[in-house]
Image (cartoon, rainbow, N blue to C red; front, top):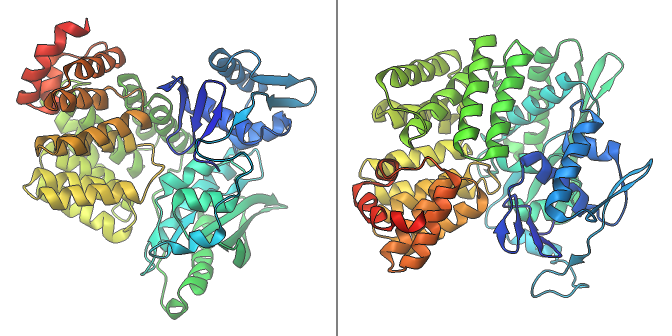
Length: 514
């Protein structure tokens, strides 16, 4: 997949998940973005409705009118003639694609040998193709990928790309060399899940990206009427097969099961993914945070033993409080602490759960226990990007600034397509500005604005950095952008999120943005 697609006055950047209109980010929902990318990638042919639904809503039962709504929304942004409906067949993207700057239209792609120059062996597990409309099979496939990723993280000598970045390629039919180049990996694991009589068949391949050579392939069957048990059995067999190819000396070692906490109630799992989807669709906005927290409450109400929802709710709630989106009260802090404790008690073997809970504890000010919990999360999965970033932030807050910044940057590096990069970049930039590393802070602020155009805090950070650099006009414009994205933004919030010194400076610019 290309780094960007240019057409008319638009530029589509898959890695940043942003559509630029005359250089400015357009307000586009996550599903609409996936639909547009799907149409643009396959611009040379008509896509049937079935193909679009499978690629944009994999493993889900979706009404066709839902597709029509998103197509209509895209036409409002791109123009009525950008997407043509072919009666009885499907859709086709009709705008002419322009060559990337500095390249010829017939330029040859980078040589495969370039992929072999990666410094260390790296691997990514791609989302499995789900060849069924049964949502249970979709959940099975998601959980299987997460568990295989967690097992592979224990293989010494390899860098495993975080699951959140690999997830960005779900449903996209891109050349493997392009996928590998964007993720920065040497090896890829891909495959599919499909029903077969009374079983589920999982097919997997281990691929060397530079040569597209299949190093290993295998099939595993799991009983369709016992998905939870089948997931554990299949995960162990799959992991043994992959590790036997990657690290022959480990074939004699015992591979422990990673029995991640799965909710017994599938509706609880669905509400959890609605929460994740709200953040992806609405960014780190007040509405996105509120929707996500509501969905996580519904998830834990349906299944009080679902540790992942407890941990994620604890983290989002304290973050919302710390950035001024909800009042900081004793009751809220007690709620966060109870949720973090529940998450750890319910699922202390899940790196993801411990990463969320440990970060929430640090944000509450319980640094010792929070850092210990994050350390445990990283022992379980050294490729947990969120835990690395949280650990870095905790270290930076505890007088280990250089070590903390380095850890945060590492976490962001190993998850280059992560939906949380907008928030993480703002947080890193805030630490850099406090250390008077203003130019670096401005770089992070601008990058965060591109990654999540709807999030107001990177624009506020950009205003503070520009003010520090003596660019008052640009600072006012950045502050105005922040206030446009959060109409309730107040000077008290500025002080809360960026400190008293910056709050006083921003106050001098405030009236110029009204």
